[in-house]
View 1: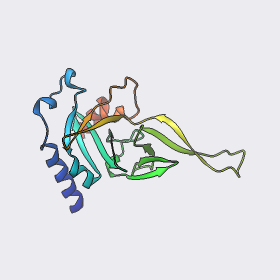
View 2: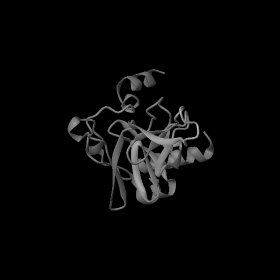
View 3: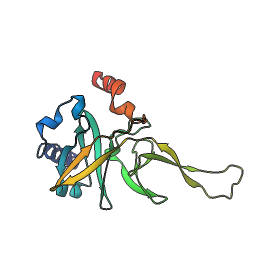
Length: 175
């Protein structure tokens, strides 16, 4: 880890404790969907991204083009560290690009994007298409200078859920 990354991670760790309410950190089901303060608005704007644990789920929060976005920290494809990826625009969508395999995920919806080509028409230009929602997106709110994340209540199963819960966490903790 470079010294800049170490400093960034240390600042993020410190931010987590500046506004956390200990009661909101409990792991019981009734509080699973309560908002958790993850940092100060000014600090996140400077860093443009930060990581946090919200009710035992690792998330990354991005500040991009004046908006906040939160999603599961690990890429749906192979568990790559999205907080280390670059944000780029594709076909009018701001996306995080996974640093491991360059998968593109929209910040706003969690859709996986890909470029399709028509092999029957080699002169046709490739076009951007959606694979559907692959990455779980969470709600970000701002209140009195604090940034809060509320976990998604969407009932559908996302591919990124594997890396945020259950089996992967058991595998990860045993290594």
